[in-house]
Image (cartoon, rainbow over all chains, first blue to last red):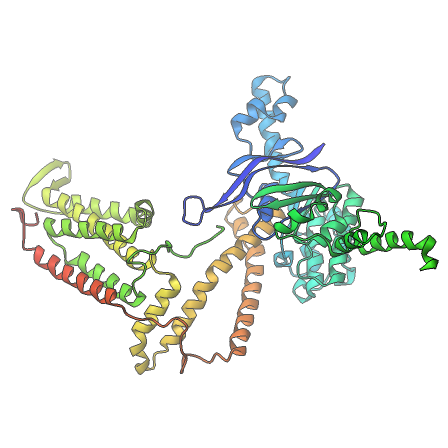
Length: 318
Length: 273
């Protein structure tokens, strides 16, 4: 089932001023449960706007956003007459139904930001507590969890992101850039969101930092079975880690599919200011030269094994 | 808050947009003087016409111009009520309990509304709507540069204002970003008592201050790297030049001001009418 669904979503900035701009234009999109979905697009394609709509930080001008089939911005009338909650409580009397629906929806809204965890771009700017441990536990504390549970979650999240426990008592402002990023990520993961949304999680990090961040995201998904959405413009990272890829262009969804389907459209992608990964392009060129490489090569490792399988057996005669 | 615009600058290329910022500051002052010269119905009609002509010249939609009146709506209402009920005159129109409404009071209220409205709209047209804040500071610096003789650091003040203006949108954007990040971690800014709400500002203010200071250090370094050391002997990128249109506009408005002053002598019969 779709974890998240956007239906005909339109979003505009600065409505009614000289600077009005459409950031999302009639976008319909489904995010599959348990998968890592990459949203790619160049700057200003609407991808960062979209993520703010996914946990109710902002609401679309038109269209609907659903989490597990529940409308994130339902008005009272809709709730009481046609929502999925209505179906759930259909058998109750009218007044009991109204009460049940409204209280469940209020709960739903309250817990929304804990169910859909948002990691903004450069999340290290959100650090503010005196110690790393306190900062990671800020989210879980807001959820109203028990002291014990908070401790446990903080340790788990720190482990996932590779924040070692001897940093716990340090001030987050004394850490290096990469460490700060990991602490910030741990702060969101500690809330154990069912959907983890990340905006350019590896921006500005060195290659090792990038790998660390992405592998902790993949680990998180594997351990919790959560749905992950990564917003980025880096094709390399998308190709490496995402199961599905959505390409945004000019506030619309331009392409959608698994990575093989998307990266097959080299021409279209480059006309949108995007590139396929270099290694994929290299494999393409080699294939044109007559090398019988398997298709779907997105990482250096895949390329290595593909090349080995070509040369491995008959490799000696070259 | 996205696309946060400072002040009310409305991009355009009208006659007024193209005037020199120094001329526009002087024109703005003249416009203020004009509104206070008016005393009689006839001159207020002229003033109102002047405001309308300027509005048309600036090519700014009326809706946007009127928006600038929103903050003074209360003052408008309050002063007109005070004028209506407090003015003593000869022509009693209406009497109830302790309230006495004279004809003069009604006129005064009307005049006050026209005066405040034209004041705000005209200064807006000359200054905030058609001039970017940066151009305004530039103009102000040049206008005040004679004060340098008195060892008043005009350039430094202007630079401070320019930097502050430049970073207001940046900080606003950053505030929004941090707020969103903390809201995503479950901070609720809009519920709870006063104490709880103030407490919920801590997760915003600390990161905001940290990054503002970092930014300030970076900027200071970047400026020093480019050998900035105050205004002494500094040339400018955008040199301001008065054009014929600037002088014509200033002389015209000066003339209108004098005209308004004499228009007070013309009445429709009454004292102020």
